[in-house]
Image (tube, rainbow, N blue to C red):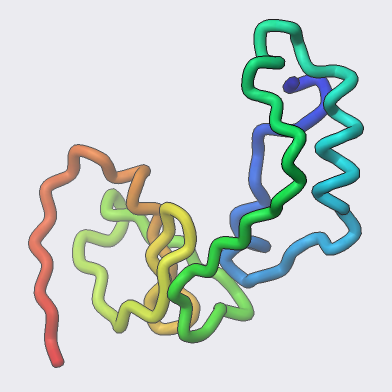
Length: 111
């Protein structure tokens, strides 16, 4: 399937809530059906139901600034959203939490 689809998400566009409306998911599903390897046909469904996932984001950032615990030991801010594996703080700073698997952190919540 990698011959037909890139295995990369434009993470900055995702975090700014920019998406490509030119792709018709139902048409794309049926287009790829012809290329589906035989060992995967058991997973094929005729149902064309499309699911929509809504992430809890108060405000999407207009510009994304990525943080890392390797470079910034203390991250402060108000958590304004979660999108996939990213935590969005104060409408611009984001951290890829999955990238930090295995890190030990202290978390304080202030009201």
